[in-house]
Image (cartoon, rainbow, N blue to C red; front, top):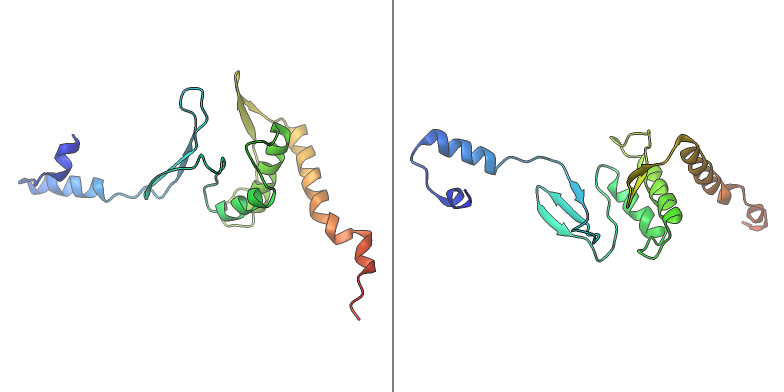
Length: 150
């Protein structure tokens, strides 16, 4: 089939169909992982594919810049434990919500040997409280009163 992509088609209808297929943009991104039992992160988009294993995380979607910056700021690494990683991803998603198109509803899960495990409402509620406390921490810190602006 690939050899047909470079062929000159005599039938204008077939040529038109191949041109449309070749020029179709999906306007979407996918993140894929795992090759056997080895974790691998690849982004697949209209622009091609990217191997992202060197940074060990990535973000996609309309809030990806905010989410990616949050993970960088949190110093997310392959050495983080699962609970810290879950919080960092939660925080990244919450920070991305300022962008149009990012849903305010959050579902969060992780993959282990038994399959995908979703966090329950209580765990999401606890993450939300931690996030909100972290947001207000600097604004309400007692040492703010020690800053002299005169």
